[in-house]
Image (cartoon, rainbow, N blue to C red; front, side):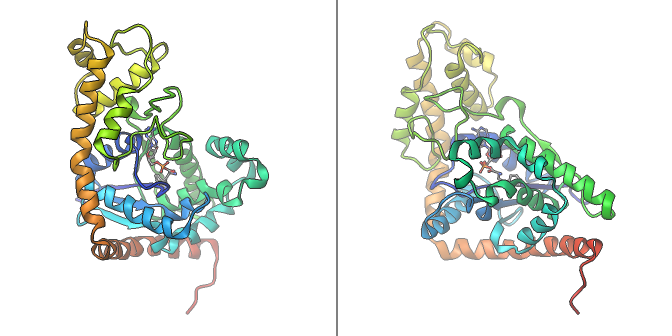
Length: 334
Ligand code: TYM
């Protein structure tokens, strides 16, 4: 029986992924890749919406791919590739942009936040159409499911709307995908500012746990994480966002229930709890870091893996694009 399709991706916007990417996305990817025909991309075209040093962007792209593999994505089983290696992404994005409303794109909250932060003159048209490119990523592969953290939910909903609109207007070309969001871990917060999402582009480094960081540094950041004055290890998102975030990370990495962790630390202080969490994080990331650095030692081999996977992606994407071109009325080149 044919496996259902899965699609997801991450931006190569930093030298390392952060623990929110790992818990919110990569853990699900790893788990789902055996039961789905999975496509995982490093979305370098999306990363162009931020200022980049060209050499650094290339390096971050390789580093992101290496971290996917190091975290357990199997490139012989799943199609792990670089978005810009498959031309169809940019081409389908153009077609989809012609059926996207200007107001509809303007309602995307990530765009609204970013454009408010930087001002309209520093906000590019690329940032505005970013979700349309994301829709192209997903729709090219006839994806059934899209596992993401909750910050991407609105973009997947736009993708569904565009797929349905296109199918209705031009005839069935796309599978309408559903977002898969792990409720409890869909949002990991900044350790210093536990009401804001942890992000690769955070202004301060102190609240971000990087997968490739020196373990001692990550342990130190956990010991310094913002908590509260109550001194009780108890989950209460509203009143104890710092402790609740640490409990979420602890539970996600160990597979244990939050209540069991609360019991374990009952009557003990935050120091003990943080030390326990630091050990869990270091034990989880140490082998991932080692494997990623090993892969990065041989960039030619990594590039070869990415090229072979891009060829696989091309075949699927080209078939969808040809169908779309036919349906919208573009003249075929003979
Ligand atoms: P990006 O690169 O910002 O994040 C990659 C994945 O990590 C999740 N994530 C988090 N989950 C929980 N807590 C956090 N603090 C946290 N921070 C990030 C994100 O939800 C995401 O799943 N637009 C996408 C990339 C993209 C994409 C796609 C994803 C492009 N095309 C097609 C899926 C399908 C993005 O910027 O993710």
